[in-house]
Every structure is written in structure tokens, then in C-alpha cells.
Length: 94
Image 1 (cartoon, rainbow, N blue to C red):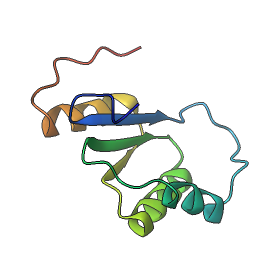
Image 2 (cartoon, helix red, strand yellow):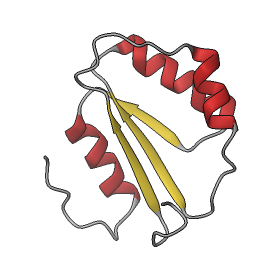
Image 3 (cartoon, helix red, strand yellow):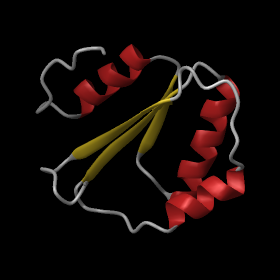
């Protein structure tokens, strides 16, 4: 889907309501390493109120060299995207 989009395609992962992770750190790293980076991919924004989950997301992106940021709330993540990409209009909260 990224390749079909207009550059830059941003990804928002909202894990706000996740109570328990069933996937390990090594599984996440293996998952992300199987995909070659696209020049159309913009920022990946991970949302979780859990400091531990944000830490693990940060570790994965450091290892895979992704352009990712982690935030505690969706409004924080959307604000970050709007500051980085001025082609985005106001992004409504779901």
C-alpha cells in the first residue's frame, strides 16, 4: 500500500488499548527486517501510554534504522506529524 501512495506515506500505530503484548522483541525485529525500506515511507508513529511498550518500539526502530517516534497519546503523535509534514492538513481525531 505504501508504494501505491503519494510520497510521503506516514504510518500511525495506535496501541492505546493494548493490555498485553503477545509478541517478543526478537519477533518484532525479524518482522521489520523482512521489509525493504521504501522511499515513499515517511514517519512511523507509535502511540502507547505504556512507557515499557514505547521503549521496546524505540529499540526495534534503532535496530532496523526506521524513521519512527513514540508518543504517549494520539494528539502528541499527530502534532509531531503535522510539524514534520506541512502537506498534511488538520488531522481529525477518530
